Image (cartoon, rainbow, N blue to C red; front, side, top):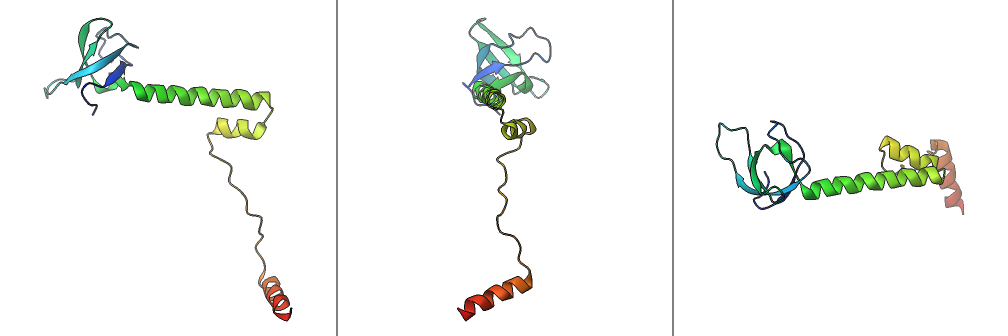
Length: 124
């Protein structure tokens, strides 16, 4: 549940109320009526009106800015990978994988090799 006074952006118009999609507003009240489908009352300064909205129709401005920054970062990395012909980076970005897993340099020794190595060190 969002806090009162938070800056939100109207991202949808689920009940076709002619909401100003894309405009920002401020939460000014909760709709406590149990029979209502609306969750919040949002004041939109641009239109100088209040709107009853559901929780699906609004999103925090901070969340939208973070998602946009992640999208731009991803696109920039893709452009960089294509410009430098870095196939590994390109595949990692496109597949959504995190950093590559380092492979261990040590190979598993057989029991005889281990005993031989211990005896050699003990002899020295």
